[in-house]
Length: 395
Image (cartoon, rainbow, N blue to C red; front, side, top):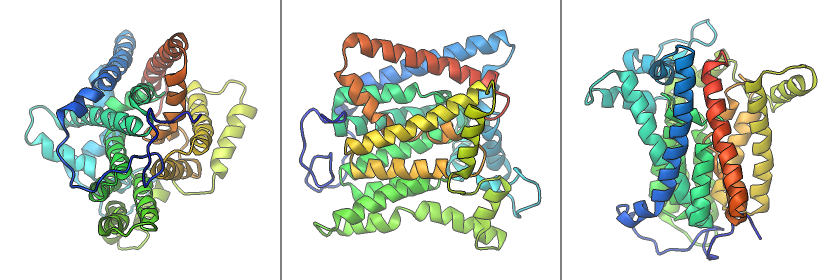
């Protein structure tokens, strides 16, 4: 039996989904929030455990919790964009052009900060935390839709206990992007094409990997046209990449060259090389270094396990949009010749990769399930704190 088999076997246009009458998206009913309540409560419990562990460790090392979560590394770049806008030229210095960062999150920070007390850093952190709750709800909704409520709850817990999950409550874009990705995928599974297109556009304005969300929408919508024409599906297929393309095109116009965005990425040492750099890192860490750094080991294992889980997802015949999204995301991360250490974070939005594990745990004994989840949560708490307090570079 597939590890993601739903509680009731559906028959639908998209494999793994239930066919529903086409109708406009209605407001989210109260029962949907009640159904998701156990998952959201579990998500908060896991993340608060990680935050408490980090706070105690940070206090012992005389570090402030709020500055580390709200103002360091990429957070500083986003706050700089919110304060001063984007660069007007490419420049000559490596790792110094803020056009590499997509605009939706800093624009939200700037807009919301006008209406809220405190600094923009506090606003950015608040947006990330709220977005993480929306993301957790979306993760549950997708898991529930595909494989039932128990698997949806476990999927949410596993996503909350991801090795670098502390990033979900930092001034970063991963939570916001995962929220858009999860609800977009849910809309596709439910054949809500216009909502899927809107979510894809917003995801494409949030992170470079928004193109993976667009691919999921476009491919699934085009496949659906083979059996039944739908103007909405065709519209979604065409509109899905517009957010990503709009920002990449705008950067090109701003710099006066068609490859402006990709030139910026090269200034950040980010280019696709077919995975050659990834293989060199793995060979060095596991074959040439006697005592590799723990953070890099966990990043490497996260990537390798993600590849295995993608194979399990294909074997389980996950719905097409989930496979396309995670497949494209993996290709982007593994085939990059850029910086190595953030790659576990780059894979954080790929929550469907955890569905095979969630499905297995849903069928496992209560004792085994409790043991695995406890170890996972504690490991995530330790590694999240290690990531910020011991590892000397960006998450």
